[in-house]
Amino acid sequence: MKKSRQKSVQRREEIAGSGGTPSSVAPLPLASLFMTTILISHLQIIPFTAPIITVVSAQEWPSFDSQEKDILYRVQYFLDGSNWFDPWTIDKDTDHCTYPGIVCDQDDQIVEIVLSNNNLVGSISSYIYTLPGLTTLNFSQNQITNGGWDGIDAILEEGALLSNIEVIDLGNNVLTSIDGIGKVATLKELHLPQNIIEFTIPEELYDLTSMEILDLSNNRISFTFSAQIEELTKLRELDVHGNAMTGTLPLDLFGNLVDLENLVLGQNKFTGTLPAEIGSLSNLREFDAQMNEIAGTIPTEIVFLSELTSLVLNGNSMVGTLVSELNAIAPLRKLHLQDQYLSGTVLAFEALHHLHDLDISANDISGSIPDNFMEAARQSEVITYPRIEIDLSSNEITGTIPAEFDDFVVLFLDLTDNRISGIPAVLCDDDDEFLDGLVGELTTNKCDAILCPPGTFSPVGRQDDVDSPCQPCPEATYFGTLECNSISVADSEILALRELYTATNGDLWDVKDNWMDYTKPICSWYGVTCTGGNIDNSSITEINLPDNNLDGIMTPLLFE
Image (tube, rainbow, N blue to C red; front, top):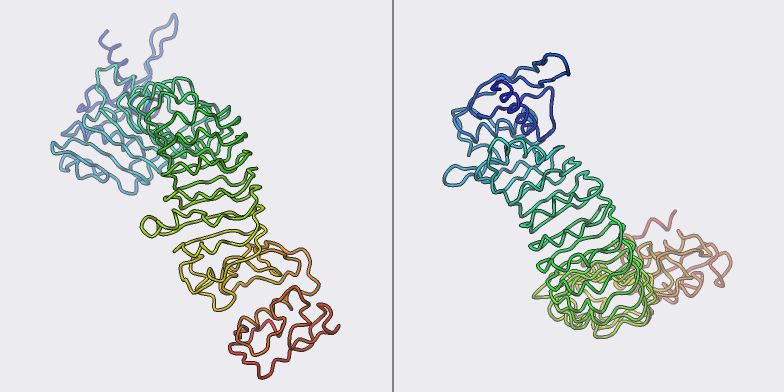
C-alpha cells in the first residue's frame, strides 16, 4: 500500500506541475517541495498480469531554502526559462524578492509576478497558485498554452492551499481553453484578450462570483452567454468584442448586474434590435455594440443611462432618426452611429457639454446644420478637452456651415460628400488650430482645408496637405466632392493652372478674370490661350501674364 500511495501522489503532481496535461517526458515534484528525488511515473496495470512499472526520464529537482524558490523553479522550468529575455537565477544565495518581475511584501511573501513580453513558452505550473501571498499574476504577451487551472484539483487533493489571487492577466498568448478556472474562487479580474479560446464560455466561469472585470475579447468564442451570468453581480467591466458570438443582444440577462459600467459586445454576430432593457443598466458608462447585425431603432429608454459617456453602435443596420433623448445624456463624450441607415435631420446636441467625439457619417441624414449645433461643447472645450472631432460626411446635409463654428478652438470637421453650398469666410482665417492647423498654414484658398470648393475635388474631399491642393472638376456642384468622373481637358493642364495661381499668390494679381472659376472654361481665364479659342476647355497653347504682380516660384507642372 505504501508504494502504491507514493505512485498516486507522484502522478497527481505530474499533472499539476505541467499545468494539468499529463506528460511522459517532463518530470514533476513530489509532495514535499523541498525534497530532492528521482521521479518514477506511469504505473500500468494489465489485467491478469503483474504490474509493470515504467521509468520515465530521471530528473533531480534541486532543493532550495524556501517554498517560494521551489515553486518559482518549477514555474520557470515549465515555461522554458532558459530562453526568457530576463530569466531568474534561482539558488540558495539569492533573494527571490530581487528576481525580475517579482514584487514582495514586508514579510518577503510574493504578492505580484509580472513577466509580460518575456518569451515565456509552455504551460504554467499549477503550483504557482499556492504561493501564499500572491494576488496578481501578469504573464501577458507571451506564448503560453495552458494557464495551469486544470491541474489545481491534483494539488488540492494533497492538501495544498490556494493563494487569494485576485488578478490574472494572460492576454495575448495562445490559450485554447480556460477549463479549471472556476477553482480560483477569489478572482476579481481575468484578462484573456487575444488568445485562441474557442466555442463556448464554460459554466464554471460563472462560479467566480467575486469577479469585477472580465475580458475575453479577440478570441474565437462562438456562442452567447448562459443565463448564469446573472450570478456575477459584482461585475463592473465585461469585454467580449472581436469574437463570433451569435444570437440576439443578451441584455435581458444582465438585469442583476447593477454595477456594470463598461459593456463591450462589438465585432460579433449579434442580431435583433437594441432592446429597451438597456435602460435598466443605470450605471453603464461605456456601451459598445459596433459591427454586429443589429437592426431597428435607437430605443428612447436610452435616456435612462444617466452615467453614459460612450455609445458606439456604428456598422450595424439601424434605422429611424437620431432620437432627441440622446441630447439628455449629460455625461456623453463619444457618440459613434456611422455606417447605418439613420435618417431625419441633424440633431443639435446643443446641451452636451462633454461631447467631443461625434461620428454620424455614412447615413441618410438630411437638412441643414443648426446654428446651435454642439453649443455647450463649444463653450466648454477650452477647459475640458483639447480637441473636438465631428464627422458628418456622406449624408444628405445641405446649406452652409454655421459661422458659429468659429467658436471651436480646436476642431477637426469632416463634412465631405454632402450638399454643402457655402463656407463662411470667418472659418477660413489664420487660426492655426482649426483642421489640425492646416487652415492657418495655407497662404491661399484657406477654406480648401475644410472642403474643396465647387468645381474641384479631392479623394478626401478637402486639401489635407500644403502640397496637395484640390483638383479641378467642373462637374462638382457642392463643397467637398470626393471624386470626379469626367472633365473635358487633361487633369494635368487644369492642375498646372491652379498650381501657378497658388504658387504666385494669385489672389494678389492685378488682373485675374475668371481664374479659379471652374464653372467657366479655363480658356476664358485671363491670359490663357487655347487651340479652340475661349469657348471650351481645349488644349492650352499660351499663358500671357506680363506685369501682373506674380510673386513666387513657378510650378514645374507648366513645363510637363
